[in-house]
Amino acid sequence: KLLSRVVTPDQVCYESMSYTPKAAPDKLHDFTFGITSNPMIHFAVILSALIHDVDHPGVPNAVLVKEGSDMAITYKNKSVAEQNSVDLAWELLMEPQYEDLRRCIYTTQEELESFRKLLVNAVLATDVMDKELGNLRKRRWDIAFRNIGSDISRRESLSMTNRKATIVIEYLIQASDVAHNPPIF
Image 1 (tube, rainbow, N blue to C red):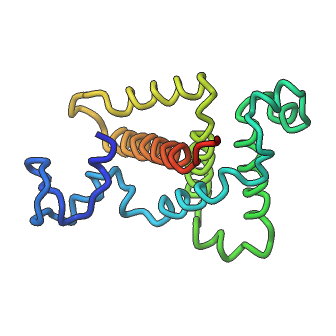
Image 2 (tube, helix red, strand yellow):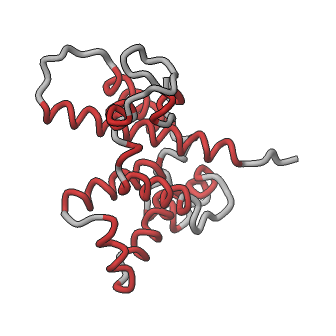
């Protein structure tokens, strides 16, 4: 279900939901929950992949919590390394010399909030040991992908599409983070 959304326009027939070179490119946006057509989402995904281990101390969060590290205390023992990475990267992005870059990423308060939320969610998704976060993510997946009637408003539809995009991105970032770590012998 998740990976079937990672496609190019010429690979999908949207009427039959099958792969074919005759796909309609104008339908790709809806089929991929807007992920393929939103440059801000693209940048948020790339940035989250780049920053997710910034300043990582090299030990699991459980060790930081057990040792009572300053980082663990600062983040109240929740996704310690991940929150630290987001905070450091965000502080850097907010420095004056990156004002032009920020204007390219977002132009409104709503876009800023959306960008930050996506960035934070994607980085926190790499904390695979936090069972509470994992359960919340699973519940959000169930809510986003449950079958509901067609009696929803355009605003509700957009909200649902955004929810789907966010949860799909979280799982992709999580999978890529787990998959890239070599085994330790």
